[in-house]
Image (tube, rainbow, N blue to C red; front, side):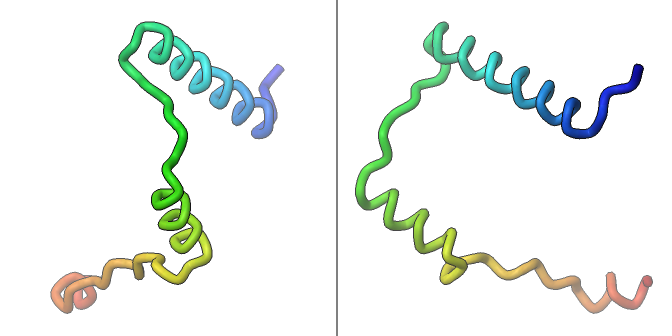
Length: 65
C-alpha cells in the first residue's frame, strides 16, 4: 500500500533526525545555544522586517517568456 503524503513527510523527518543524531554522536555536528544577539536577529527576520525580497528577473529573461 502506498504511503500518504503525511506518512512520507514523517518518514523523511525521522531519517533527517536520525542522520543529525548520528552526526552529533560522531562529532561532525555540534549543537549549541543561540546567543541573545543571534536570537534577536532571527526574531526580526522571522517577523518579516528583514526578509529578503524575491530576486528580480533581468529584462532579457522576462522577454523569453
